[in-house]
Image (cartoon, rainbow, N blue to C red; front, side):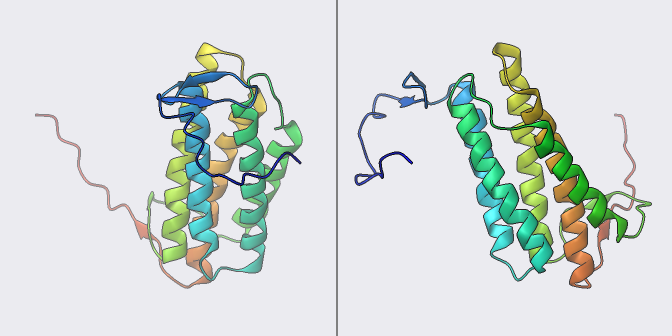
Amino acid sequence: MGNRLSNIYTRTGDDGTTGLGDGGRVRKDDLRVETYGTVDELNCALGLMLAQDIPANIDRIGSAIQQKLFDLGGELCIPGAVTMTEHDVTAIESELDELNADLPPLKDFVLPGGSSSAAACHMARAICRRAERRLVSLAQETDVNEYSIRYLNRLSDLLFVIARALNTHERVPEVLWTGGKLRQE
């Protein structure tokens, strides 16, 4: 493991640039920085969910996801690095299938909310979708790991199912969309 930070501030970013993991410097609004920053934001949102009183299996899943998201952030911070694999994608699918099997089938769209833990999970899901969009945009500019895109895509589905499972566990009914009418004016 590298050196520990003894000084948190370095002043090297005062000019609006930041260092990448390969030693290069880019503007702080560079799409690569925006992408791994959004992955970090997702990880923080998951931390909020994990700070709730949640079932042990969901805590285990969420904690494992946080570790993988940190890996993904590192991958994105070092151009050309690869940490995410097909195994990571299939692991998410397996967790998703297992959790979804115990839930009632959906007949309507579910609005984000319910219990505080489910609401935090829905927030993480929405941030995950944004991270995925940023990564897809980055893939238009440079090579990115295809499994990283797939991972975020599956992860947003898993987070939706986790939110449903949390509401079920806490016996909080899901808020269903009542089907507002779209009007053209």
